[in-house]
Length: 380
Image (cartoon, rainbow, N blue to C red; front, side, top):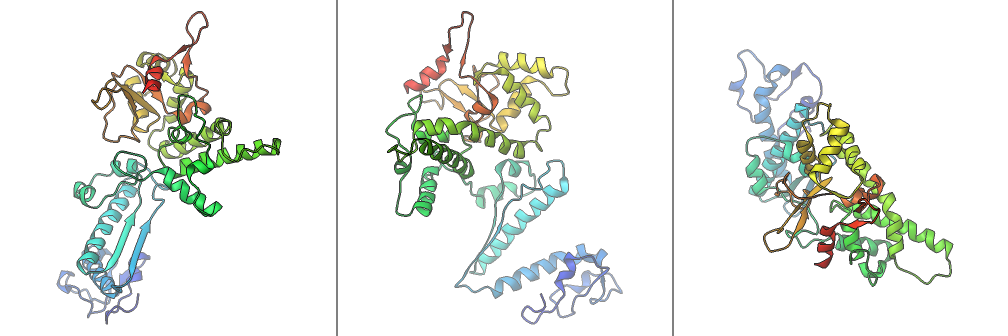
């Protein structure tokens, strides 16, 4: 950057190794902050912390003044989780610096009457690990939670998928034009709810499931070319679940392994429990059998860790106080605290196929005993 309203300075030096900085004397800086004998055109790099704040303020002011008030400017930061390491303080400090800088630039642009907006996309679990001054103010005034299909928003993944159907198929196809909702899935579920339950309410999850369904639909049509079915049917969803479930656990592995180095051990505990829903005693027995001599902090703490990453939810009688009962998962209700005394726990439905879980217990005598809690839920 060589010229900003008559100000000339080689700003690129700040971001490249150098022994000295060359700051022009007419640059708007309080030169008294420099040590005696230091020339503005030959500032040692060791003095950078002294001048960088004022330099940044000047740059922000000059850049803002150059913006066209009739234009909208967006600067977006994404994929910040790729280098995430919860043990790396420098990574967290860089994220904090980015958030504070984005806040300051947005405020400055608004005060100057310019349409500049800096957006930082960050996973909520990473944001929760950051601790810094003014975090609560940023959370209250500058943070927007992106979510679908919750009581806090009217945005739905169905609406998002319908926009994608339109882009691919043309016209204005609805969800029901693509999925045959005239036939219910097991448990009297719609196909949409069946898919939704197996996601973390994220676009990439439902896109992957739908693509898996499309693949199975094409295979079925190729085997029965005379079939008149032009919608995704129950059989397509059923056959797509294993492929999707395999994808789902790989996604979780990418996101969780840095938080929980022993994540795979806990997944194996869930796999060996063997059933979709379980009691704490069943989990504790399997945990102690597999990991009792390990350095992990215990079965109750392990179960809470699984809840924090939504691999497991807990059952609460009475639900939200309106007479019903329900399972709580962290991804749906971030504010709900884990209840280790819950009568029952449930593994996320997206993991059923890849972990080979059963939906029922098999008591002595060989007669399947369907989970009574499931029966109650189906009556709702």
